[in-house]
Image 1 (cartoon, rainbow, N blue to C red):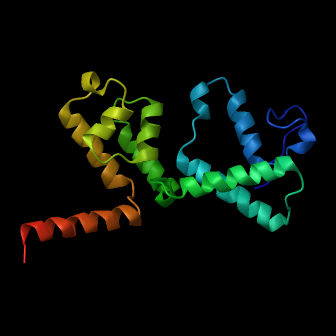
Image 2: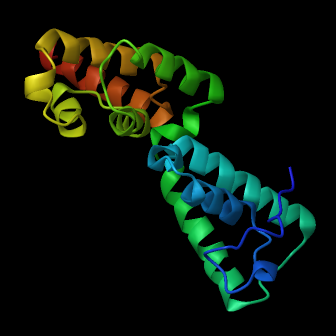
Image 3: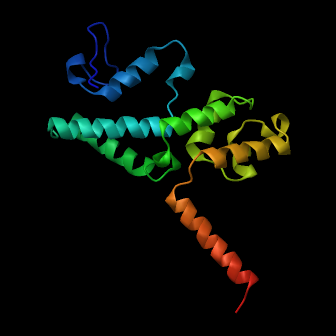
Length: 179
């Protein structure tokens, strides 16, 4: 989908509106211009999808690195995709995110806390305590366990985590059954 700035919109990230043909800048501009600050929160999955789509659009249009600004944007896009593709978000989908957020409604967490859980996929109670502010006062041990169960049952771990888990299981088996 091709999106362009309307005549009344100015890009805050480029010197002039004419230098801003990028969908990501429009998305950021619109997010910054909204009155509700929480509406600007994007999950790692959404950023991954946005940058992947932008990269594909750039490939299809055949645009090359013309200016230093474009080179900088290409570098930022590349480095961000390189990092984010190693996180659990790579294995998420809109359906998984929707299911996760629906399941999170029963937990009394802020939008930012839900976003942290979605982005990082915690696997231990300690990780939950690091992501949920004042978790010791707000959550019981049972609630933390329920959160962990929700996170691990809905959000995909990815092949790396599965492989690591299988390796750990093999090591545990070797310790229990020495030859």
